[in-house]
Image 1 (spheres, rainbow, N blue to C red):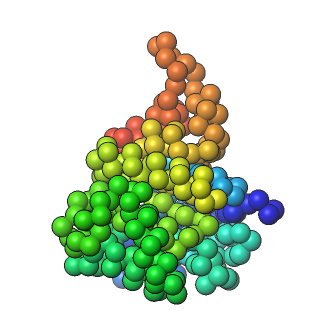
Image 2: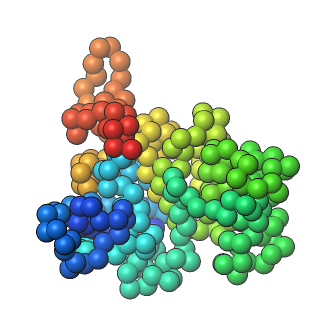
Length: 279
């Protein structure tokens, strides 16, 4: 359908335990013969409408980052099909890459360079006009709360929160129509987290962007997402609006249920404790 930005149909990805994180070689069995196959993403299916903010809520190790890498063409599904605006991510990889960008919790930079230099390098990779790219870079960085005097200072002198804001600015500079945000606010201070969340909401409103957001922050998911898929052990165990998910849990102790209550009810786990243990 024309209004669907993303379709994930039965996506499955397996790794041998002990293989490098995010990588596997099909058919290659570890020499010791003791490693077992682990299914990181297990028959996952959902669709995302254009201009929607779609959340994937799960603990660290639940499979949500592997799912994002599959959508971003960084991994190939072992089974199933994923399409972005009707383009198959496996067969039409290069066309898909032009439509998407990704921000991860461990975004990489040239740390000796400034935010502006990092963004201009990205702009050249996408064949953007240098003058327009520079103007847009300043506007985006300012929207994210990065002061003018910091734009030209080395990234290595900036806080973790500021560096993550630069990662988001770099991703948006290329004007993706599907933006993949993999735990973009993890480890940020409250002010930086709020700045990033406001930017995400403004981004959707002003630029018709579709956003897929993974998180284990309940308040963030509740505030930003139109719909949320709860993922546990590689499987989607529930999918609905935040209010629809909370309606699955009975009200207790005189208070309305939260997404934390939903996650514990569906998985038997505390999302905060699980994230800290596995992180």
